[in-house]
Image (cartoon, rainbow, N blue to C red; front, top):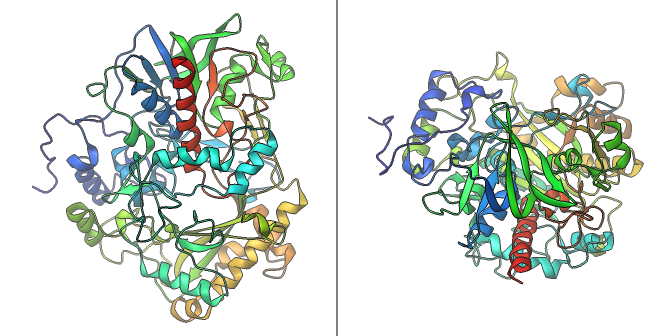
Length: 605
């Protein structure tokens, strides 16, 4: 029977969170339940013989890595390659969902409390369509972290980004010094065909290539980009083609998502010196006489401790690592004293919160019906061949970088990025071909385009809500505080206008602004400065690329060690002092590779 699990040579482990909890598509529907049942029973997807579901915990380790996400999985995996070291990786969430390995399902694990921290910003004059709830910031709460939730795009940033780092004070973190660590993680499957080996590497743990499936509409949009007089490129990483739109390379292989946890971590049977503790919330670092001695964590409602003889490495992400630091007594004195937390080190933890942001513009393709992409045909193609629409993210694989009117083009550092959303095989009630979406499906297919500033001048901060470790921090992103941000976002919006007005898109798709969304700003003329500002504040696109909250030269030194306290490093996006102009996962991986290398070098000497 096709739904019966395959025999893999060992028993199946927990499949992790199910799409049944997804706000996008209810997995309790018979069709989705059947598809998911098949997925979690395939040896090549579930990999039960090497799946990590957490197990033993000893009293003491050489190194404790807090956070099993994009950075933490790399740090723990690299440290454990030294068989003489005992390493513990602690993750607040559970095992990565097997179904999340299907690329088209990525949105199904957003806003799901099993896999997402469910964070929102403090409400202000942005994300107004959220009706006073602030902006949603999906953050991975599962083994693999945000590399389970994101769109998988590969981009290293630009040389000028790392000039900005060194200008900020991150000595030794220039482009040339970082490049070997970008190379170390990458296994590009398209060097010599699509991209140049001068700018990419092979042999690393993370597979990088374009999705095996690209819908026709992506090529039509690229034709529209050309008609709009904008560049189309093969590779965003190539410094000779820094600006232009393209089909992104992604972290994918054999029709599946690859996370850092999947690529870097081995099960306890394969690597006995690495233990993984799941569903354990680290509440603070245990510090005695300004030396980190271990961590306290909460599991099943009970507080426990575990010792570290060498170091504690915080890799809990740009929002959670600073939270743990402050709960441990490392942070702004005024904040700590407000909550009666003894001050260990007075440092600007939580400041310098940076993020990409812009606006989401909604469109209707009036010459198409709004129907589901996922059906029995697409499911069968994936289940039998690992091919077809389920191997990709629809039109989300289309992206690009362009210059705003404020950009310094000589630096080859584009400051705008564009994301496209739609045509994803993520949901179906019945599996029926051309299943309608909503009662008005004949009115046209819905898509959206995000127009984003990559170098906003507004900088925010996060702070404690209370001294209770399970109370989330308060996030103040500072969106729109600096007028230049609106100039960049308006420029980005007008690039979108040029693209959607391309004749080929008008003729074939009848693309129009979705009046259901643009009505919120009807008091202004469409595409005017006032209308674009209204749309930006109403449909703020808060990208999930937060960084800088424990920055090199402010909170940590250039070897990622926390100032004034021994035995703690921060190795994740918190460490990155300024933004990368592009998708940040590759840069976070680079930081993790460098950080692990530094730790091993420091202790070997």
